[in-house]
Length: 138
Image (cartoon, rainbow, N blue to C red; front, side, top):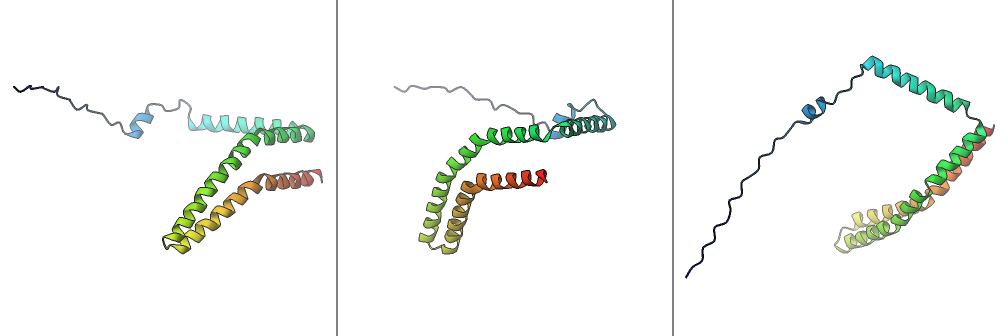
């Protein structure tokens, strides 16, 4: 005795492909190019007036707050740099093992330079900031 099972037929769904330009053509700005230029000029003027009005002491305080705001990101990048450099160094030794000595040594060199650079990047930026502050004081 045989049991027959009939499977339901699966219909292929049809997709309509909308060209990129046609999709975004509907969301055009209501501003004319002249109005856009005027708004940009007003915003630039207001920003320049605000920046020029700042006192150097408050500007230095803002700069310190901005630098301290990026500390978590800097620590994250430095933390990720160790495993990435480790993987790159392991890969470079594998390339040396399979006979591609020049590619392996190049990868080893650049992984080392990148890791050291990422570890010294905050110190280099502090040096640049102190040079900038010294130049502003003169």
